[in-house]
Image (cartoon, rainbow, N blue to C red; front, side, top):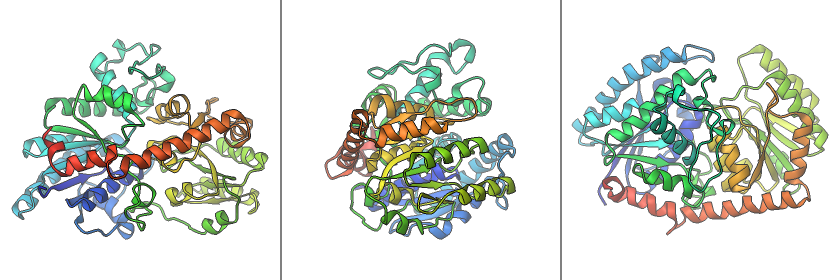
Length: 465
């Protein structure tokens, strides 16, 4: 096997770090040299929880803000411009440095929001690979959007449906929200996504797309993409203890930006099997006070025990709201924690359902653990994920927003009864969830589709195709 040196660059947010760091671990376990890099501040925040593994090392790239982090509501447009300008120069220097040290980079891997990394790789004559941290279906929608309409909204009838062969039609409410003209992130994100597609098409034979999915789960979208570019499904990118089982100690992604409170495990151990509702909306979603109140009352009125993750905040009003919610929760009914080890929670025998924002990491993790979900999508690809969960994979239900409130208390109670109750639909949803769990594990085991794809990458054939 050729000794690869993968340089993996991640945008410094939890939803990007988790899958890319897991990919780094998987490649290192396969015998490759891997350097995982993110911004200076990003690496400082996660360094205490980074995994130690033979062949895996760490580096930083500068975003021009080494002494500070961008604040919520800050100048994201200015930050992205700084990251491109400073980061691309710094990345070039890093690749040169590795070359001078006799450790040349053989593949530069980059995540969403970093399309300029592909240009650096091309200029340095290094193979590049884009890690699609969203579902393959969302990436297929992006490709169709920019190739059919050049990303020009005047040419796009938003009321028309998107067609991916052998999948249901995607209405505007099912599309990644950044494609919608009235979405506030549209002016920033559309040019970035267009650049991602253009970079991949500039070198269709030398550029790869690593998909965080598995063949059996998204065969339709993968087939669509395979006809357009070089794609390789290398997911689910989750800790080994919950997938191939080759490393029973690998129970966490590592690289935690948030402090975990693990007191909840004792509480979970006291609960009956499949009885607990797990509620988490990821690392970025900000919920209104009204939405939190609706969820709280929906959970309490459902009479089911629950574990609810509400992130700590520097905002005094949000912290006050969190304390108010905690005061209303009797410890016997449920607990509220600031963060948790999600894979360990989802795999716990007491968990019966997952109320989720439908971010792709969370969606994939629920499928790997065989937990049915209640989707409350907020933005980005979450709407697409929720549609797939409900209509294609049949492993959950999707709530419909009513203004600012994503799910009302009575709707939450109704869906909890559907998913966890004795009705036929709930039984089918639970059967489907367990089916996808079995298929996910089969994909990463010796001889499975993902196992073989990762082997191709490590043996170089995947990089030559």
